Length: 192
Image 1 (cartoon, rainbow, N blue to C red):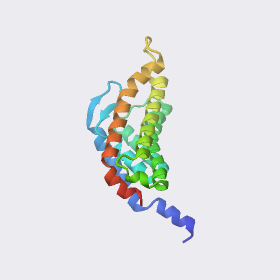
Image 2 (tube, rainbow, N blue to C red):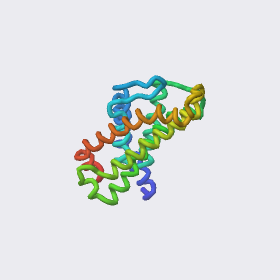
Image 3 (cartoon, helix red, strand yellow):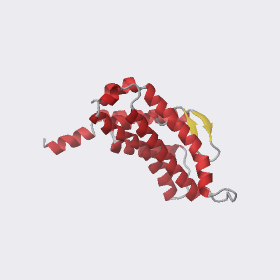
Image 4 (tube, rainbow, N blue to C red):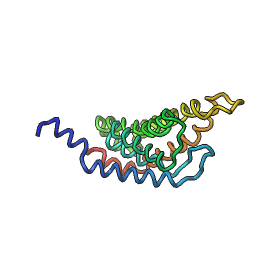
């Protein structure tokens, strides 16, 4: 088998697909366990982003982005809210897909294996935080573009940021806490 074909087969092996399915199922279940539901969409959930972060850290940026986008599609199917195609793409595909940015930690962990031996892996934490902030940015953009009208006393950015940042940052920080707690387990699987 040519080398390029071998890489292609390895990239989409059955174990990775099975793990992606398990992580999707976990994300759906954990996202359903909510502490607080926002009045116009969004919620604080129990480690809802954690399975997506773990998958991205283990398999890299592109697979993490893909899994996040698939999760966004599932979230839309479960709780559909549709204004137009642009809103659908921003709120579901791009926003959740951006959680795969945590997968940038994969390269750092491969190049600097000593990071995995640290109790708190700074690459995992930094890229999960970045992923969560980008997710929040997409929510804010969507809020400005599609939901801020009719709020005459609030500038669109202020309204959207005040609405989306609190629940987004709490979800991100909870997931990062989960990544930190699971670091001893994660380090065994990152060096694959």
